[in-house]
Image (cartoon, rainbow, N blue to C red):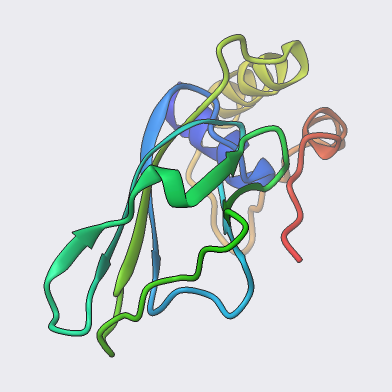
Amino acid sequence: IAAATGAVETETGRALGEQTWIEYLDAFPYGREIRLQRPPLKSVTAVKYYDGDNVEQTLAASKYTVHAQNEPARVELNDGETWPTTYARRNAVSVEFVAGYATIPEALLFAVKFLIAHFYVNRVPVSDRQAVQVPKTFEYLVGAYKVYYP
């Protein structure tokens, strides 16, 4: 079940059940928004960054608006606000968020069940000479739910 669920999530780029994620950036973007992966977005827990003195800070929620209805979802600076200066380091900015469906769409549930059945029927080890392909039905089920990031 976990393998099939993970495969559907990987193929679509979505979070099926409720999950907490952290998106890391080396700095705030040049634009006014941060795009978050793994829709659907439920909430943003915190936007944190390392300031010029390499001290972790939390960006006030009053400085940005969360657009959860977009795919991918966005954290956008409010008018008149600018991103803070960050320390030059890897992962200087982090956005912690919760993603996942309240009710998983039927096609995605069926895709998970379909893969479970496929994995059950094809339990033999797979080698270069004996590759078992996932039927096209799986692609048809998840295709409409794939998230494409610009």
